[in-house]
Image (tube, rainbow, N blue to C red):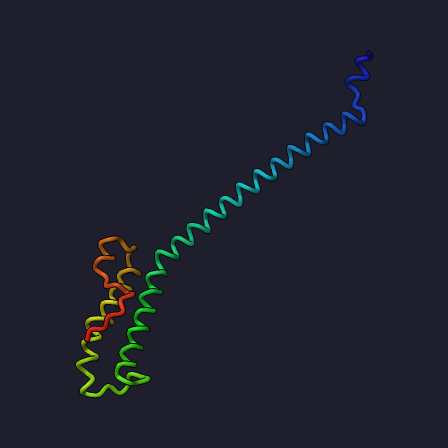
Length: 133
């Protein structure tokens, strides 16, 4: 066998080398793509976690306040709060002290600090459907 024939590339050797190079490039592209997608997924998970921790309680408190307000208006047979009559003032003050203000303070506290188990225990249950009267 001639050694010069062994070292000179022929078509079969070129195809084999090209196949190996293309396979390596494909592996490298797949690896980099998977790494980039994993980073994006991690960032998205972090954003979702932050949104759920921060805006979730605020949304619940907002909806609970809206439901409580509509319940009070319905109980009084009104469609809007103004004007508040003198005989309704006691009920409005009671609802303000027992439902609206604690809910607002809880929303304010959860928006200014990260909610912890101790701050959650001080906040009233936003989903409570019991009325003060």
